Length: 153
Image 1 (tube, rainbow, N blue to C red):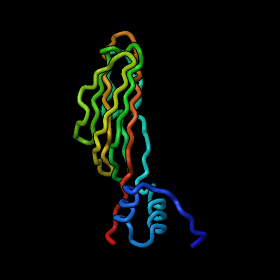
Image 2 (cartoon, rainbow, N blue to C red):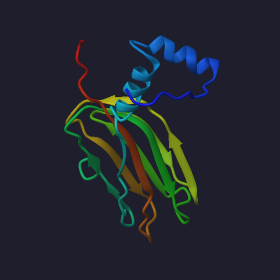
Image 3 (spheres, one colour):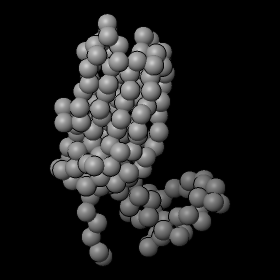
Image 4 (cartoon, rainbow, N blue to C red):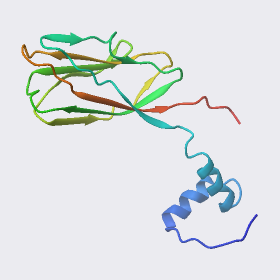
């Protein structure tokens, strides 16, 4: 062990550390720092340009992960010009978790489904453009947390 120092923490933080403690506070804090990225997160895009009067299907617009993930947050941005002309439906496998998200000019939508998705199960977005004249490109981003297998100690 290196040089010892003192750090100030609130009583609440100290209590939380005591509940997690299996050795010294130093060992507990090192373990927490080492494991902070145990469940890494990333943001992946389902953004597609949809031609006039058409639809991008779930088979055309999906993400597939080789490991289990949890969908933490979905972010959708409808750029100006989309007003009531674009609709998004989102799901994972056969489960729909965002039915009928309707567009608006400059509208931002975010929600947190906190949904477990098994490995190889597609996360998808169907985008329908009802505009007969112009294509539209809503931004769709999905924040996922990769879940690693947990072993028994």
